[in-house]
Image (cartoon, rainbow, N blue to C red; front, side, top):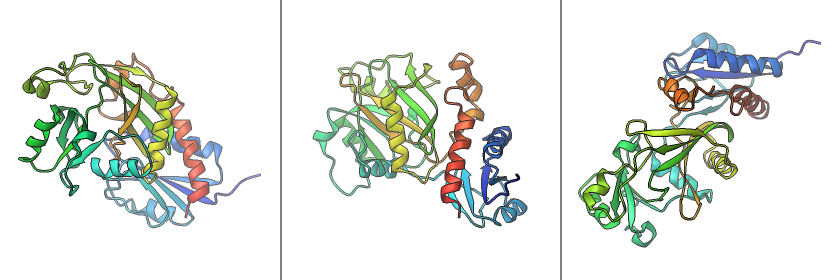
Length: 307
């Protein structure tokens, strides 16, 4: 018995940031398991007018890991990356009751709570795209507040001590389901906390490839659960690259950000060969059967929410 499609799934592909082969494989997985769903692939670099028109003939769900650039669907429930600042993300996490390090943003309109910030903080720019490890400085709280008074848009966050060799977890999720998770650990020790202000400011505070790091697959259940909760806090962004840290002394976890713009399609980015090499040649799709998991999640969402 032939089943006719009742709904459409529209995948929006970003050339040069995502391999088309990835989207074709995901589409094939959907077609194999869900004959009631017709799958289309559009380009995020163009209007894709023919695909856009054809996909609008039935209730549709639109999925794009990256924020929509040039493609605008004619109909459908849209799940796509969003341009959210660090401050906007933290506000959403707090509203959802998630653990975040206490912070102060220069645009908050109130004085910083120095007791909540503690003795040491991380200072970074608050504009979109500023939260890169090369731009983050470890400072004593008073020095950071003095510096903030002479700078523009800044974000000050309580320092979570993950150990002398800074580390963090990166969990990639699709609608909260993990598709890849690993832990990055710096191979360079950060400065001792009793070091001079200058030493602290120059210190490594995040594991980064440019300064030296190791990478290991991770499936710690509490980390995965927090990444799932982070998706529930910002559910309109379907594909998260969630960054989480663990306090070395207490074991407590804190969510930092989800990288919501969507430039996190780790399976076929420019640096994917480096990620694979750092994980010992591991196939990134294997840990959680990524493309089957993505297809299954998209089938579920399409059946529930196509419009």
